[in-house]
Amino acid sequence: VAGGLGERLGFSGIKVALPYQISTGEPYLKLYIRSILALQQRAAEVSSKSVQLPLGIMVSEDTAAGTEALLKENDYFGMAPSQVTLLKQEKVPCLSDNDASLSPDPKDPFRLLTKPHGHGDVHFLLHSSGTLEKWEKAGARWVYFFQDTNAPCFKVLPACLGVSKNLALEVNSVTIARKAGEAIGGIMKLSSKTGGAMTVNVEYNQIDALLKATVEPRGDVNGENGFSAYPGSINQLIFALGPYAAKLRESGGGMPEFVNPKYVDGTKTAFKSPTRLECMMQDYPKSLGGNAAVGFASVNGTISFSPVKTNLKDAQAKFGTGMPTYSAPSGEADIYASGCEMLAAAGVQLPAASKAVRAGIEVDDCPRVVIDPSFGVTLAQWKAKLPTPSSIKLAPGSTLVLKGDLKGLSIESLDLKGTLIVSVAPGASVTLRRVQTSNDGWAFRELNAGEDVPEPLAIRGYTIDKVAQRELTFDQPGSFLVDDTPQCSVL
Image (cartoon, rainbow, N blue to C red; front, side):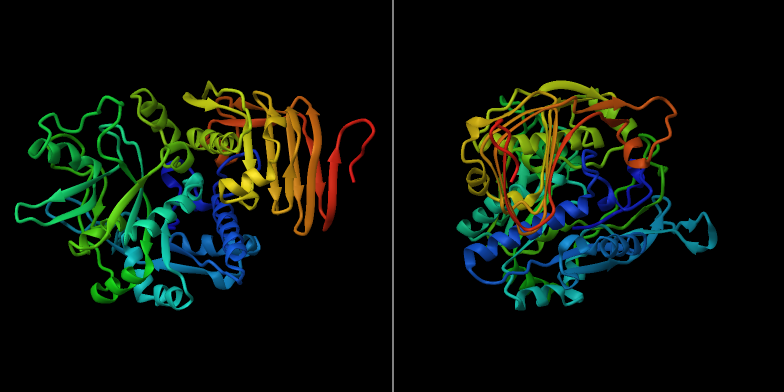
């Protein structure tokens, strides 16, 4: 993962420190590490041997100290420090105009203004630091690349990894259905007149012109299903480690460079702000030969892709165009919806989502479900922990938070109207035999104009009023059963 700054969102810190939802306030980095540890636990169970899955975080001069501090202050969120590698990216000089004039730093005229070189540097850093070689020697067979503020990104990894294995893919791009004109790239097979071909990402601002010049005079248009024929590339990539490491030993990990200036107007003579040479990690397949197995796996967007990368003002304008906003309100709503989708897939009957407007952005409003990844990384694990899904009911507007070490948690019967928080310590085995909870719960509230709130709330435009909740806390190892019927008690 590449961990950047949250300036464009209105957040002064590193983006992986942002809460991915405000029901618990847990940061993205904790969610990612908890997801990796859950995958690690599952791998150990099915292989009957000890497994450690490494995490690489690409940082820059601006984010390195903050990332290291976040990890140390939280004991690496349960991961061994030796599992985490910080890969520091250097910056490159900025260009101020079409003549590629170097830009002085506005704070110091004797220094050049610099910016990061783009996330394509991750290939060079993995190779030059020896990290990829270390992972290969430790027995790793695949590398997964993901974004810094896309909370559901690990939900589809087991299935997409299965696609990579079954099809022996060197590169597998996780994709979603893309609307024509949407600002995400498209996966296309490009064929040359000499017979060569490659499957690659084409950037969104090039798709329309490319199609008009080749196979579709209308350009980038939607089909009858309301989506483009070309799946959207979301920068979730699975590489087979062996061929990847071999290619980087050959190439050194350099990626093609480009400039992408934002112009003041249609004359394209003046930049809005200085630009720089940059490179993209998804351009890696362009370095492969024609015989390389390159493919993609298409998944449902809500389950896998809901990044937070648009500030509230721009997101409100974007909402008016009908395009996804990729904002803090949409990202939070989608992570709750993602939890509901997993419950529904396990057989739980849930109330239909309704439309709600939060901070001027329409979102799907469903029960707010936050479940730690240790509950399970596969649908089979979820079904095993929910043996009687027809006995689980969540009322509209309810909040269900399951946190801690959930390996030993199972839910047989639950009737929830309001908010329930279940916290489980390592070594505790908990069965919710019959739980009936009714309280005033939690409710979203729009912020008042000028209301003084922390940045994670300001970038959302709303907060949560936590009126009432029931908390079940199991902070010691042991076996526990909760049964709310009159003749029983909590054990």
